[in-house]
Length: 312
Image (cartoon, rainbow, N blue to C red; front, side):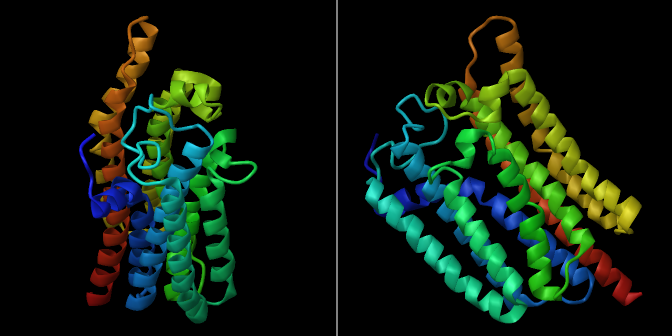
């Protein structure tokens, strides 16, 4: 591997392509706050910064703990992990995780000051669970609970809390929007776990893909996308959302070619042929773009509906 400079190494360590999972719920929650006429710029910005920092800390924790636990080896099929590849020493990655958590904590102090102690409890729990995803004595990802973690914390928790720090109350609309985002982010994780099913199994990482196999995992991918699509449809039907929030369904478009790759892995295995799971790397990026478009569609659609209603 050619020499990588320090800046590029740390950018690589943060896994920029995954950050849409942290940003999308903030965009959606802010859109629903704007629809109510309670948008507040600084709290929204602090929520975004805090969410990104927790996501970065989680990524660094994954990089460090997966290497220490033997989950990342030279046979890894996914994008480069800086610890396993020897680009950054383990101690530096652990220190980077600690710094990101510290900055997230400082950001959280401001949010607690303006929105109260519920935000403190949610913020601390989010940071602890981010580390415990692959770290600690009972790492979630190693026991098949990674999917539940992603759904809850990158979905209803992040979206509803972003709305709460601006509006001062909890919103059923933001919670439902968050459920859709949580399902979409889970689809991202499902692609990742499908790609790594064999290497995870060899390393003792018992994801749902390892436990139940390719057919279950492919089905889970499509069910996750279906659940995501159901959220804006249910919102328009049951909660009186504006049809503008159906813009979120544009997030499914990048997943069409991703779905073809997911199905191809299952078909190759069923036919007894060689399964090249590296082909799922682009599918992961496509699904991540879908999450970004989905969150933007929810947020922009809700904000636009509020703006048009205010001008009428």
